[in-house]
Length: 133
Image (cartoon, rainbow, N blue to C red; front, side, top):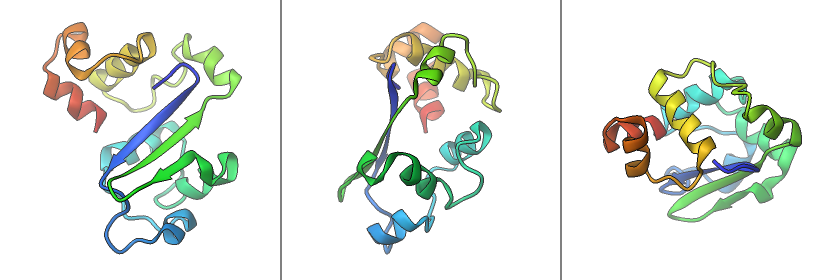
């Protein structure tokens, strides 16, 4: 998470058997149920397979970088989102306390590593990694 946007990195590239066209058309093979739940709770998507076409409609295909090893999506924040970030808008969207703490930590310093956040929040590094999955 950065001050002016969010970058989401999915390791492993496209799921086996899924083409770029199918991906951009919204055919869904979710690998990360936690991230899917967070997006659903934040209202960033309404159902499985809907999010990619919505992102493309708003930001274009160029926000996606797809390789054999990863899919990266870099979404810029609008000015109104940046203004509200410091007011903790969006922090009460069905996330547990550890997930909220991780997000707050990243808002304070987007360069934190999992190890640094674990010390800041007083939890194990693995707890931070699970919150980010």
